[in-house]
Length: 126
Length: 247
Image (tube, rainbow over all chains, first blue to last red):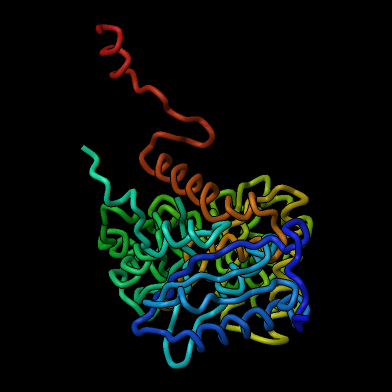
């Protein structure tokens, strides 16, 4: 027997949204400091309960070049957006976090905001 | 179309030059900013309006912040500067000044009515006359950003009270970053999320950074060019009419 619960059926899984963001700063910000800044801002603004409810997380392997994706619950996007607005310093750097857009899947977010190329981009349009 | 109606530059209390602020506005996707100065004299104001740079992509609006202790001074200064600049902002704080600003139709924006106060600084009488005179009440983002803990809670409480009253009387509201450096600026949609945070529905919150500022700017530009006097607008000046009849 596997020592973990079975994957929930699709109807019971929480709905997700992906927030693509860009950090405007003089220097590159690493993943860990960005994640802790987001957590601190969420807990400051909404308390521990609100932060727990939002299911917020930054996807690690898509973070780079001061751009990334935040996963959160589908009805908490506005709350996460305002928490991002309140971040003014990460480490010693002044930062502004700009939300590029919100999507329903990682694939769309990658194509739209993180510069992923698809086969369609390479087909000749003549 | 997002507008940030107060961004401080070196000519007021800010740290950065207007070029740097405009560069940041470009990165943030804003379509216009207002870089106001504090009123000192008419000569300084004239110099500021003449020296205000123009850019192709960012609309830089001229504005003046009137800071006075007595309500009579507010009315005097506002009537002096009205014909010189596009946006007239009153520095709120004391109840008498807030009320004078709300009752004066020449004022465009009443900035931070809750500054340094224990209460919200506005009551139903002020809000009602602000709605009649089309004076927008400001939601100041810097006050929230630069405070933390109990201080932020108290500030947010006062702003929420004003938002609630404004919703009752349908008074226009404007969300501004009121940034003193370029790092205090935020994108338009982010400012709207702050307005949503303090109690406005999301549609109205987006209006506070797009439609309402744009309306104020366009209306005042028409008035300054002489195309609008009071509530009467000149649609056709006669010359265009004759050419159209010929055609």
